[in-house]
Image (tube, rainbow, N blue to C red; front, side):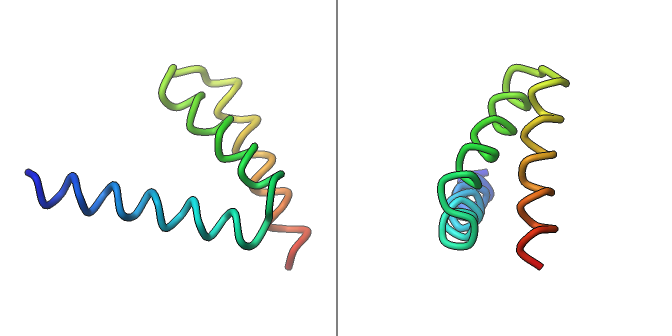
Length: 61
């Protein structure tokens, strides 16, 4: 249980760092909105965060 918790936390930190490095502040804002929507179980907020991140991903390719 402890190992899986540490692994998930490390994965979350790695994703956050990757988004910060590649997309900067807009990526962090999109990730924050997505995470807030998932934590609060707010479908609209989660969709907005996903849309922001997907738009950044498409534009950067």
